[in-house]
Length: 247
Image 1 (cartoon, helix red, strand yellow):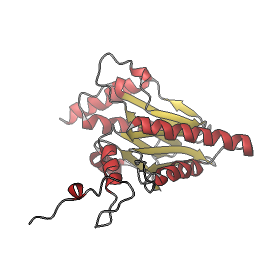
Image 2 (spheres, one colour):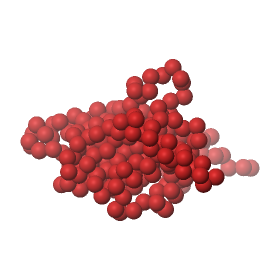
Image 3 (cartoon, one colour):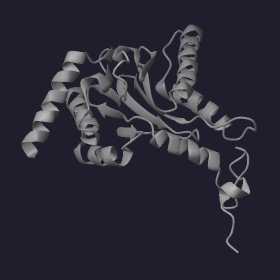
Image 4 (tube, one colour):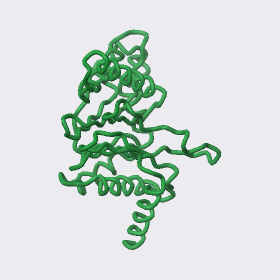
């Protein structure tokens, strides 16, 4: 007689129930949801930190500017997400409120790590409380702390790590490999932008500028700045030209 698999046994019916081999199956399902989400990239640079994402617009009637994938948490903190974006919106709203409360209470901007820990505390609670489901979203949180660029990745379990360069979402393995090969500690925001666009374009040669959303924070100003559409278009054209030459 064949042993019943986890799903038949019902170990995935409650978030509080461990399978016999010590796994929380609903959390693993949430991680799979993230891998199906649109790609997002974060890169720490010598002069700041960059977030770049694929807005994955598949309907021609959608207004590209209305699709928001990168969010401002504070003047010096930004985040992007992959997975269920409605889940991300709740976490971002919470982070924005936390940043505002900290500023009002202490008359000082919040540090990026405090934002990340608060988000991850809520994520972790949702892995051990009955009647809840895990947040099906991973976040890249970028910031400038004490004039130093910083980047964190959070996943549905509530764990977080600090990275020099990271990616979440679809094509994670391929992009991670490219980042490992081409990332340098002295990379500039301009170079990081080109690398990010190149990575996203490598996943889909029909990629167009309307799907791109990129934001950077500079160490000198600690200011949230969105990359202009004409700049993105120019970089994408350069990437396409280089790819054609190699072929």
